[in-house]
Length: 378
Image 1 (cartoon, rainbow, N blue to C red):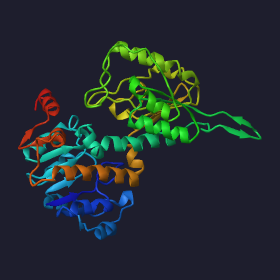
Image 2: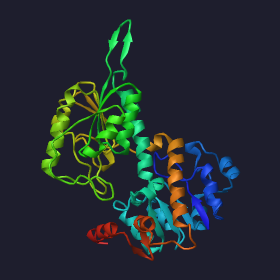
Image 3: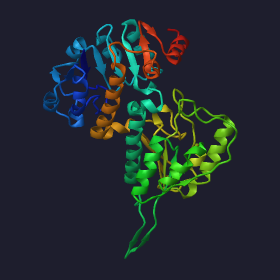
Image 4: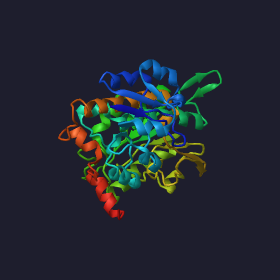
């Protein structure tokens, strides 16, 4: 097969789906790799590097899509990109199918077999294909660097001739992959770190990184799905969370929020009234901004200041560290490719193949996406 890697066209996207070092993963399986001219340039990967790795450079997107049997991408395809794909081709990459229903419909109509990286099941066998976790690692790291740059304080404890500088107080909301990376990074910079998560099971992970785990009285509710994603909680549960968080805010310099619910609006963990409890000059970095935000005042893609608090609505932080983000994403998508094509025909009885597939044989085969299409009147 011919495996195509187009240049990402979404504004601000600097990553590339396949880095030169991973080209051999595809070519060793006796497939040809086609890379659009300049596809890796924003991530510091030259066309020459791709050529040396064994890929062929294609001059433009139209030519790439017309020739490729398989497309590897980072961002979900636009309507125009979906229409450029060969009928019956295979797509692997982020798809954001619940918010890009028009694209999903086109893929189905063109009999394109599509696999969404965000639907790779969270099972041990698929950990090396988990792009969400890989990119969350990058986002958690960068969130702390942004916070350190925005807050008017230094993170570490410093003993100087001019006096003692106390460490900054950092509060991380959510101890998933992004949250744990944020904790680790803030601790490396010398901050005093507290972390909150409604799942008691993560307490040891938080403490192992040198942070204090914030306890709360837990209503009897399941807090995560069988697939390892956070579940939407009741109003009573959310109220308890807000109370536990509010108690820490008056002495907090930086809050990094990471709580998201797959396919739904992010929970509001910090209300407008809670923002007023924070010291002037403090900072909130909201990693859930694209899902509505964990802070009620967050505006996606903007930095606003309210009540003396700066609130940063983070969007696509992995694209701000394109070299390593591309390397990590490339590894996950290559591993999924190997999983899908390890036999002559794709095995849709395999859990990974089945769960990550969105469209096949002219149909939307993912139940969640199919339901969203029905509600949308498609």
